[in-house]
Amino acid sequence: MLKSLLPFLFIVAAQLASFSQNVKISIVSPRVLNDRRAILLTREKGFAAVVHSIQLGFDTTHLKMDKNLLPDLYQLQVSQLKGSLTFFFESGTVIRLDTGNVSKSIVTNSRSNSEWQHFNDSIQKPSDLRASKWVVEEARARKKNQQDSTRYWLEKQRTEREELLAETAAFIRRNPHSYVSLYLLKINWYALKNLGLFELLDNSLSTHRNYALLRAKKQEYSGAR
Image (cartoon, rainbow, N blue to C red; front, side, top):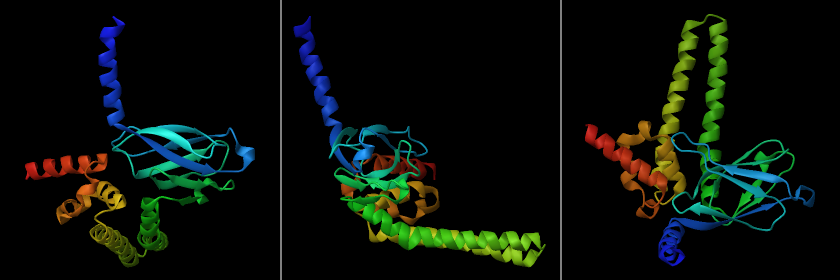
């Protein structure tokens, strides 16, 4: 019986290996945090959360993950520490933990995270700051019952949203090889689907699950017209 099962088990193991990869992550932290638990997870609509538990105190942690998952946006939380870190994770990523606020931890050895930071610092955050200002001004105008002023600030918010989408599309065009572009197109698909951006993405991204998702959405959209 065992002999008859061995070939089957070998095939299953080989198939599992072909769909997974050994992923490395290093979390540099003070010794006092040794044995503390960290959680690495995704939180995206449309996908079940991918969660990994990591014990601090090791130079490198090895994780088994599906080959089509990385690079992608992940969140790191550490037991009993304030804040959480959102970053683009790929194998070899190094995180220098900020024990005062995990969100301020420094991420290195991730090209995708550098691209993600560039997008956030140059496009997303400035837009968010302006949008927040327009919301405050709108609230003030409403409080004073200034209808013309209220409409003005609402229009400023609408324009800001449009400009953010335009800058996001421009980023994707400039960075067709980037997994960040793939992610941005996924989360903004319905606003950007008519701009031909999916066709601009480099074929090197085609093994990622986000690419497969967008390809399916593209086919669904094309078939519906």
